[in-house]
Image (tube, rainbow, N blue to C red):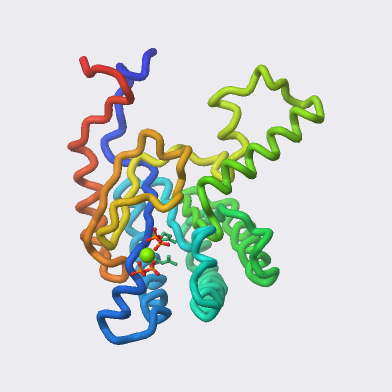
Length: 242
Ligand code: IPE
Ligand code: IPE
Ligand code: MG
């Protein structure tokens, strides 16, 4: 069966979100940037819970990019301790609510105590299947493709793979996202219309929504609206519709 004749799912099965605007949200209130990051983290729970009824099976959220190390040391360490706090606080309810959590990004540069919490949360929720939440920490699309290429090259050198067999089905098997479907819809909050190195390979045919709302104000209702409007889009994947 050709792609053009397949019955498309109405809603997006995989939604990815660039959670942007925490700093500006805090600044507008005369508060430090970290105050905005804490408010942003509280939103995550609400959006994760909204996924099941909307039939969003996969939710992938951008929490920290490979470029975010350029921020002040106090913001970076504040974010890292927020991630630790978030994981400690949410493990029990994520597990109970059927959420399977995965992390993407390069863990090598992360603090050992954070990596342990990440591994433990992945393990604790490994049997869950209701909603698949993927959190991108120290993630960059280019870095991911470079790391994937390195692993692929090692397999070629070891004789496990022939260079002639490398095609567009091969590379994604080496990406951090190897077990996930490609995102159908990518949402970015805060009014910036750029992707900032998020899911470069995977979003080749994603639909994009750039929303003006700052992430800490992004409500379940707004999420529902954006996910709902996806059904009106005509995806063509390069073909001419019948
Ligand atoms: C997004 O909010 C969160 C992270 C990048 C960690 P920002 O911190 O980028 O907020 P703005 O864009 O400065 O408002
Ligand atoms: C993208 O936001 C990264 C995350 C949301 C984690 P940034 O705020 O870092 O992106 P730029 O710098 O505006 O492109
Ligand atoms: Mg930003």
